[in-house]
Length: 90
Image (cartoon, rainbow, N blue to C red; front, side, top):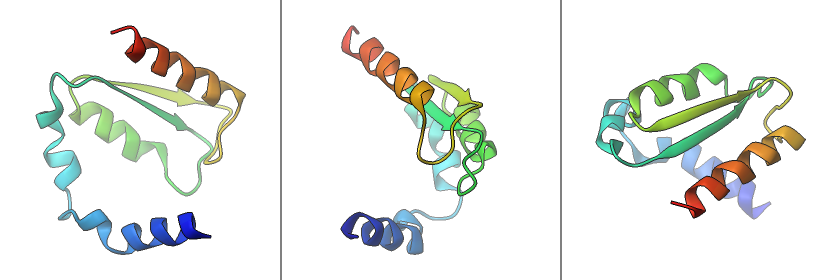
């Protein structure tokens, strides 16, 4: 319940970012690697938003999973562990 309240609080305030700030300023992340893992079946957050962020973030890698929704799947877990292992070895 606490987690849901925190998420709702941030969401209702737009995470205290001005409209478009995340995509507009994503280029500032150049040199910072990242992996965006998103399930195509996530009805609460469509993949086009993640795709736009991946295009704006120079060093981001986008992984779209056909079998995952918002809650994830075995393949999501697999890709998450692979990404974490990749960062651990850097």
